[in-house]
Image (tube, rainbow, N blue to C red; front, top):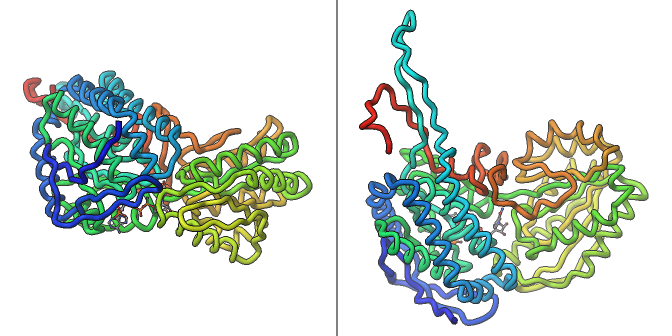
Length: 501
Ligand code: NAP
């Protein structure tokens, strides 16, 4: 089944064109025309979402679970067409699109079963104590309520799982919040076909059409207008530090500031402790090379830095990574802009004093080849720029003289999505000395693994102190992510007839 996009926005159940078009820039296959988003589209979509909230926000959990399952079914019904347009637009391989589709439908279904269980409501009840002296205690009940229309920014690097009907949208729907998606201009056709699936589910579940709108990109004003719209009550975003920070600042400057749940940059450092390095440095090196180059390194959890012990085993580690990375050829990046930002980042690292080349190559246009650099712990500590994310398959090995230097590096880190320890039993004392620091720096700490796989589960945290995310108390992956779109309300002495169903 070949999908030919019509290029329209979906606003409150209607496919609408604008006055201007932009042309998509797929990695391969035909380009298509799409309507450029306008500020008036934002207004129409936000108003429809607010209208929908008065019914959708008060639906039962069963109704919303059916809706989430229906979206998953509608996505599966379009599986081949989604893979076709998704691979064309992003350059990601077919297998990746298929896997990501499974992750997307899996997370919609997970949220359906999660809300049916009901624990997420975190209901609390302090029974009235009328005879308590000196003051009686009132009856207090607390429950989580949905907050209203949510703006979601589709991510370039996950065209399905973090985009139109991805984790942010699934969590918002599960909570009872309508969604306005600002589609990423890197994959407008993929956004359109997923929006088609959501619309079909809205119709089959007989919901208000304002529950979901998709506004295509092509105009920077749209994002700003969306986060500043008075009817939008929170924002879910995955993308760059610069873009995320600009939108976060707009949210904070509103007359009514709203939470901006931005998942931004991270270098995801790995600390390789002495015994593990001596015993299995080569295996760790090969595993790192695989994780670093997966998906052309375009993962927010891409481990860009390995801190290892200097000495013979450190040299052997560098050589093993070099050899493993040398076998990786060029991969297509998501957009020309991301490929060009990758090369800028690579030049920044290469030109930093005290940094030595280990593996360099040439890549141009939309291609990325891996790069590897090395430096000492002291040099890394003196050059803040080395701690900034390079989005792509680029690694830096930092050679530390001892665990104290590793701890200094850990202390100097900015907030991270993940930190990883590679350790054997005999490294436990060294790992214990790092743990109090790593807990303050990262949302997720791993032992003996690689952070690129992010399980969608109850205990997952995909967030962390700034700049990993703009809201360190939240996660954008896993069932806890629903809490971003809920607000606790306390009901004092209210008769049962006035309480939420
Ligand atoms: P981006 O430039 O931050 O864009 C993300 C979304 O925000 C897009 O919809 C974009 O609109 C919008 N946007 C960005 N800045 C804006 C502003 N000032 N005002 C209004 N809207 C704005 O991210 P990207 O396009 O995905 O990739 C660019 C870079 O982001 C990469 O090179 C990489 O460094 C980083 N990145 C990081 C992650 C991560 O997980 N940490 C993921 C993806 C990308 P348009 O469609 O108009 O551009």
